[in-house]
Amino acid sequence: MTGRNPVEDVAALVAEARRVYRDNFGEDPHVAVCAPGRVNLIGEHTDYNQGFVLPMALHLATVMVGSSTLGHSCSVVTIAESADEPKRVDFNLPTDSAPLTGGQPVWANYVKGVVQHYRAQPLPAFKAVIASSVPLGGGLSSSASLEVAVYTFLQQLCPDDGDKVAKALACQKAEHTHAGVPCGIMDQFISVLGKEGHALLIDCRSLEATAVPLADPGLVILITNSNVKHALTGSEYPSRRKQCEEAAAIMGKSSLRDATLKDLEDAKDRLDSVTYRRVCHVIEEIERTAKAAEALKRGDYQEFGKLMVESHNSLRDLYEVSCPELDVLVTAAMEVDGVFGSRMTGGGFGGCTVSLLQSDAIERTMKHIKERYSGCPTFYISTPSDGARVLSVFKENQ
Ligand code: GAF
Image (cartoon, rainbow, N blue to C red; front, top):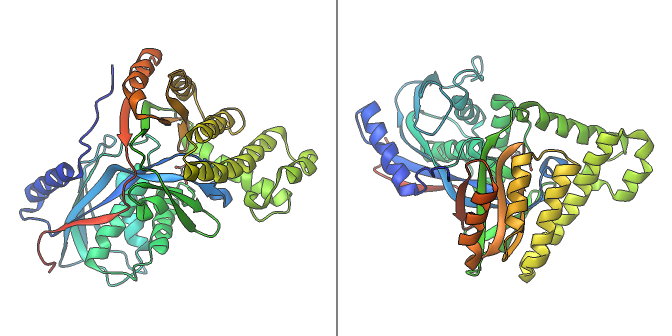
C-alpha cells in the first residue's frame, strides 16, 4: 500500500487557504505567497561545515495568504498537517523590551522567529493563513519552507532591500533562535533561490551558488518518503554539528571545509574513533558533491548515481544518520534496471530517499520498492522549481 499524497497543487492550496481565511477573518486576504520545500541530491551534513550541497527546490510548497491590519496584534491560522496543537495563534508585534520568544504551539515558533528577525521596519500587524504540501518531518524542509513563506509574505507588507542571501540567513537565524535547531544554510537558501529546471551547487562558505541544469525529459527524480521518523533526530543533529566543530578546532582549521584526508590522518591520535569517522564522511562528501555537480553538467548520470550511493553508504556507516527503513528503500531502488543512484536525503533518521532514474523505469521502480518495503511509502516525482514567489495580490494592501 502507498501513503496518501496531500494536495500537491499550489493553486489548490491557495484556494483552500483563502476559504479558511474568509471563515476566520470575514474578508478576503490581499496577498498570497509560496516557498518550496527541497530535496538534496547530494552533499549531506556538509552545509554547517562550510562545504558544498546540491539541492533543488520542489513543487511541494508552503503557502501563506493574508493582509496587514491595524494595531499590534497578529493572528495566524495553520491548516498545514501538524502535530495535535492549536491551529490558531495570536501574538503582538515584537518590541525591544518584549521580543517574540519560542513557546507553544511549536509550529508558530517558525512564524514568530521570522517576524522577530525580519530585516525592515516598521512591520505592520497582520492576519494570515498557512497551508502546505511539504510533508512534516519528511526531510524535505517543511520548516525552511514555512520560514521563507513567512518572510516572503512580510516583504509584501513592508519591503526590505531585496537581498536574497540575507533573507535566507534571517530565516536560518529564526530556526536557530525560535525552533532551537542549529541547522546549516542549505534549506533556507534553496527555498529562497531555487531555480526552475536546475539544481543549485551551493558553496556554503562563500554563499555563492551555481545553477546546474536538470531538465532532461529522459530523467526522473523520484522521492520516496519512508513515513518513519525516529525520535533520535532532536539530539543527534546538534551533537553531529558539535563533533565536527570540535574536530576542526583540534585539527587547527576554522571548519572542516579546510581539512584534507591527510590532515585527518595526521590528527588521528587526537580524535576518538567516532569523531574520526564523522570527519571522514564530511571531507569525502564535500569532494563527492563537487564531483557530482561536474558529472551532472556533463550529463553523466551513471557517475552521478554512483556518487549518490557512495554518499548514502557514508551517511550510513561513517556519519551514522541513516536507519534500516532508508537503507531498504535505497537497496530496493538500486535493484531496478534503469535506476542510476539512490540515497537518503536531509538530516536522516527517517524521512525520504531520493533516486535518479530513467523516466521509463518509474513504474517498475515504484512497484519494486512497494514490494520490498514493509512500511507504507509515499512517492513524489518532482522537477526542479523556482524559489519563493508572490502568487497573487488580490487587491491593494491597505
Ligand atoms: C537538515 C538541516 F536543516 C540542513 O541545514 C542540513 O544540515 C541537512 O539537515 C543535512 O544535510 O535539513
